[in-house]
Image 1 (cartoon, rainbow, N blue to C red):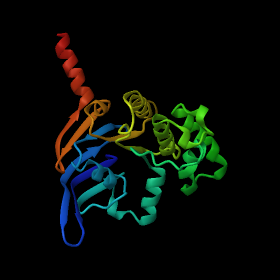
Image 2 (cartoon, one colour):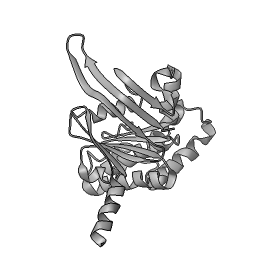
Image 3 (cartoon, helix red, strand yellow):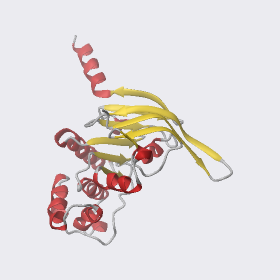
Image 4 (cartoon, rainbow, N blue to C red):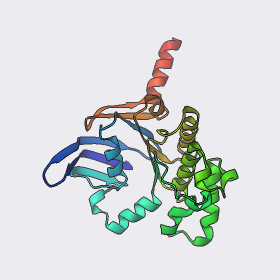
Length: 240
C-alpha cells in the first residue's frame, strides 16, 4: 500500500463569478521513505498540490488516499491529528514566532499533540541537535541568519517525528551555501531516519538532490523520473 495515492486530482478555485482551474487531473503514487521533488515554474500548480497533499486545502474532484484511506473519509479531528503527528511542514518564509527562542519555536507543535509535557524539552532538544543548532537553543529567532531560521523550521517540523516532511521552496530565501546545508539536512532525514520527503521547488539544482522528480506544468504532470536510477544508467554507459 502506497503512503500517498493521487488519482485524477483536480483543483478549481471559484470566487462565485469566475472559476480558475489550477490542477487538471494529476495521478501518481509516493511510497514510504521516498525523497520526491515536485518541480515546476511559478503558477504551475505545485504549491497547490502540496496544500492538497498536506490537508491544508480540499480538492475539487478526483481522489486522494493517505495511508490507504480516502482523504474525505477522515473527520476534522482525524485531519488535525494527521497534520500534527504524521506531517511536518517547512515553508520558504520560515514562519517562526518573533521575539521567541529557538527552543520555544521548536516546541510549538507539541502544544497541540498528545505527547506528555514532561517530554517536550527532550524532544525539542533532539530536533534542534538533528539540525546542528544546539548552540542557538536560547537565541531569539530574530537574531538568526536565514539559513539558521530555516533549520529551526525543519527542527520544528521534526519535533513530533512525522512520517512525511513537506518542504515548500525551502531554499528560496537563502544563499547557495545556506540552501545547500538545508538540502543536506533533508537528505539526512530521508536516508538515516526514513522520513518521506516531498520537496516543492522551481530550481533544477535543488530538485536533483531528490531520488525522483515529478515535473508539473500548467496543472498537468509533464514527467515523472527516477533521478538516481537515471544517473546510475548514465554512469554505467560512460564507463563502458
